[in-house]
Image (cartoon, rainbow, N blue to C red; front, side, top):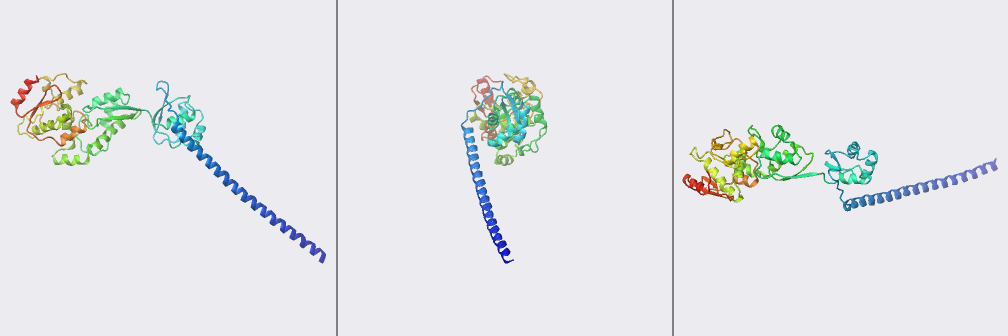
Length: 376
């Protein structure tokens, strides 16, 4: 019995040593495996980082891809569209064949957050990465200049010629569009209610911007230019913002030189404040031209006596005071002149024919100036 017991104990000790050795080996393998995974992950991250950074650098240095509008395919990317949505749009347009590959390459190449909404010109001959480069660049825009003194009809005509708007839809948006701006609060109901407020400037519009967005951009520009202190100034003068813009629009169309706008504004204020009913009729030829342009789409080369008798609430030869609305969209200089007119005692002015005006205090002086410069 003693011999058997001793043998069993010896085997047990041997098994324990083997188990301990096996455990140590397994622990060593796990440690090796763990560090191997960490090392491989670190290397992969490093390589991936270098790859993405390298791609970003190559994007900055890569040649610009330009496709002729006549040969390309117009693709509209909606605002907020993700890579999956963009891939589906591209497939529908025939630009790519496999949306999964596009999404994968987009993620790997770091383009997912770079795509720009708007209209882009693409081709089905471009590589997937070239497509990504085009979509991450600026969309196609059309530059358009709206001159100071243009009325809404002229603005609509310019936008239609540029392919940015349909004139009828533009006027529909003018009359029915909802725009939230302080200066439009309490605006009287009238035809072309936003006349005077589409700020003249140079703009860049997306091809698919649409009439309402274009109008909103122009109104936002007016909002930026009509400073908070202008509201207070108008109030202190006993004028509404709308009356200031109406007067500014007449100044804009009458003045040919920026240095004369303050003086012309002073003439109109002197007449508006006059106790003489005749003087309170501003007798601005610019208002007559507005009537004809809105009716016939043209301006008259010369205003006749008969033209000054045309029936219209905008005819300042007939009505007293200001017309019911602006006759154009004035620039900032004319708006400032309407707010800060020159103080003087002139009541009349007549064009000299060189862009400047002769100013007179009395009607007799005015008649002499008319004869001198051959003006009715």
